[in-house]
Length: 202
Image 1 (tube, rainbow, N blue to C red):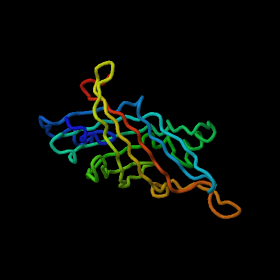
Image 2: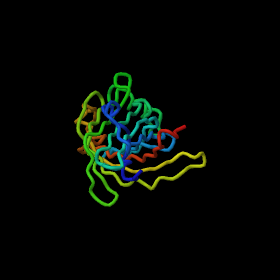
Image 3: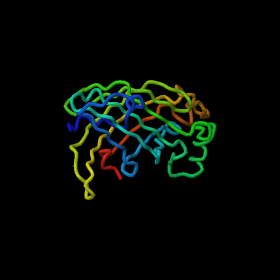
Image 4: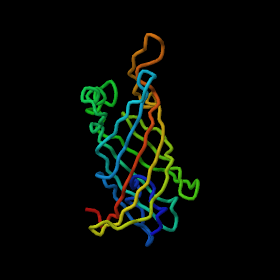
């Protein structure tokens, strides 16, 4: 199977019902070796960084046409971790992510475009805080498949994107005395994903 068919996160739900060709293969995200990280400006002086620690998903790939791959992933909202318990509790609350009301963040691909020898654009729908918006992921990879000590075939890639949290209805903020806001609106997202061929996933 061509490594170029691995393109970030996981299989689109619609693809589960689509006919599969002899060239198709399913890959599962390995949560233990996958991270979804983010960075947001704090008081216009520094970046606060964090991650979501619980992610899962699947990719349906076709070696005959890498751009036909279907990807879907989901994240547990409450798994947000910025290495500060008080701040994490606030992020999980109604001012920001409202994890009790919106327990998952999801992504489903709609289109994949090749942009270079090992770079791609993945266009899809991101559902966050109950709002769905189209986003574009810039992906590098995937790496050449490798067999791990248990015999499973693995590959990996990295994707980046930026969103405006206001677009998803996350508008809580406080004004600074000297101008500006406590929390920036732009959120930079970096995804490092490792996948395992589904028939060999543990």
